[in-house]
Image 1 (cartoon, rainbow over the protein chains, first blue to last red):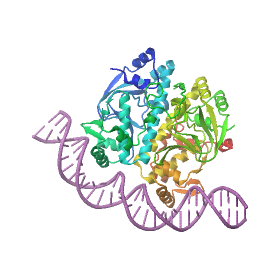
Image 2: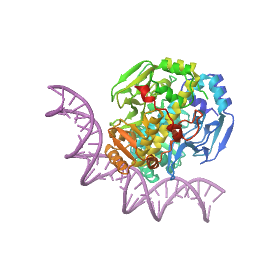
Image 3: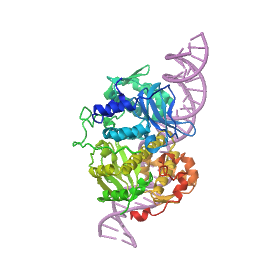
Image 4: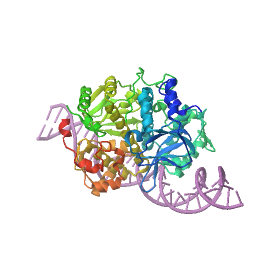
Length: 260
Length: 260
DNA sequence: CGCACAATTGAAGCAGCTCAAAATAAGTGG
DNA sequence: CCACTTATTTTGAGCTGCTTCAATTGTGCG
């Protein structure tokens, strides 16, 4: 199994064999999870970080009356509770959407890893900033886009992200997410998600068959969702593919040293 | 020389004299800005980071048709484009709301600073995670809260944040933000913000007089906004455990003096 | 086969939007 | 300090995207 974490971090630049080896070594303790389980709960003070090896998860917050806002979908390669490492206490929860395997990396080990391998530290920091960028784009959707555009946008984003880790081929990918979960992510009701999804299907933009989404008309969908993948910063840092940046002149920033 | 940055970072733990001195040294290049100017534009590749010394700014994104989503308000002490340092290209813009002063820290200098002073690096990372936490909470508002609760929540949040840097006293603070800007931040229209604000006033939760907001009934407002300040991680990291409210009440009030 | 969950449909209601205009406040130059 | 201009706040009225409530139809699975 190619390590999705390595793939994930190499987005930001190549890693040496030693570094890859160190990463593999850190992610040996594996736990198996079923669907709809919390990996971390709101208010927890975790002593390790969770790296998703397989399966989907999401970060979410619950409101007093039971409403829920999903803030991100987590896919293989994502480290989902780095916040615990830096801030101690979690202010949100992480729950699985499907069954899956999770590598558990104790904080001390992560500390070691980042002190010994600054490039890993740097890649992690960059990954953190990409997460923040995804949050911001999600906020734009929640605040300013119609239900229709929001869904289209999400489908584009997931396609792009899954492609990077090899879980999407020619615009087709598995999205093991119920319409209720979609609704919680998009700030809508299940009913409305259902109707809007139908609209997207009838317009021939997507096809859905048993949890598998196919972007039948990727360009049309991008347009419908006002999707501009720049914020994902895919392949920007390693000179490989990825969209041309608006300005030239690259400059490789160093990492902040991860300190605990 | 003013340093709200020191105050800001010391939220996460004490800094030595040497570190404070280094921070002051890094933030000597000061630029003055007028209102409604971009500090950084979408697509830029900044070569330095901007630290707000005085005045308010916001991060925002523009949609093709001119709609705008403000994703955060930036206040004195905030470093607003660390992303440029880590990812190179900006995927959002930062604009001033008022006139103000901004310290410009070249990336090389920041790199130096963080390599020489790991505790500064750590504090910066923590600050980054707090920003992400604020984003997430904002998302909950956009996705799941009513206009009424959203506004109440924002007013609580700003009160709390401004209090930390000494720009709020007994629930009263300057909020130099137009209703249109509020609307862009909250994903609403100006008209609706106006009506909802009136409701909050009539219910005696807040008072507004010339850009100054007073939380007349802080408890009521918190309840209206479902505000639970945990996500701000105030005072959690510096060993002075305990409810933030207590901690905040005994905050020395000399930030303004520093800022002038 | 039947249970539990997910997707779908219908109908009615409302929070928040749009459009349009008036009332205030905040500059700005003389 | 006043007349003039421009930005901001406020109000009214009608409209709609999305919600709510409630029920029906799949669908996966032990």
